[in-house]
Length: 224
Image 1 (cartoon, rainbow, N blue to C red):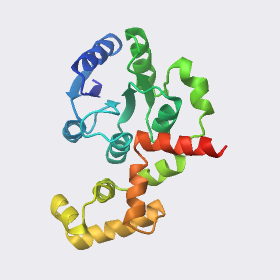
Image 2: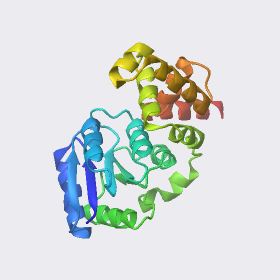
Image 3: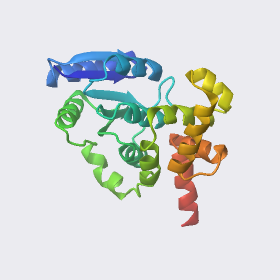
Image 4: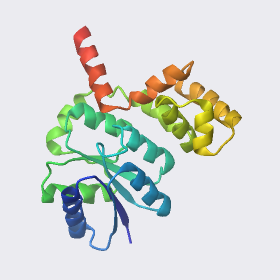
């Protein structure tokens, strides 16, 4: 019996996704989360979840960081992004960071059902009307995505806390590890991200923000 996690802070949209799942996967067990911490708790309890449907903007989620964290910690779980932001750049970046598909929140029940069926059959899915625009996007997150994906789950947590301004001692206390272990993680993080210091590591993590992606796009267009 397939298990599907719906992670979205809007009850009405969770209900719409549940309705679509009931049509195409009537035997599925559905679990729900209203924020990213609860989504992590669900996946920790059910690590064999087949599909996670993840909103990019909900409490605890920082743009693509939530997607990257789940892909890092639960690589066997297919993750499809559900979002009200349908900009081709956002779709392209989500796919670069390992999303199995992208479902706009404007999708009707028929399109939701089509998307879920495709993704459950291991086919990448994006709205047909966006395919050409997404294909034209440069995919500037491919290198960053590969570097982020190379981190262990613990290294990802350390990196996130560094980006939030935590010191090594604070990180050690929060994660229940030795400070020297944090320093070892930092050394590995610097190497994997090809950065030299904490500031650069924090900048790399903050590039997972959707808003940061738009800033990079505007800067690129301004130079053309």
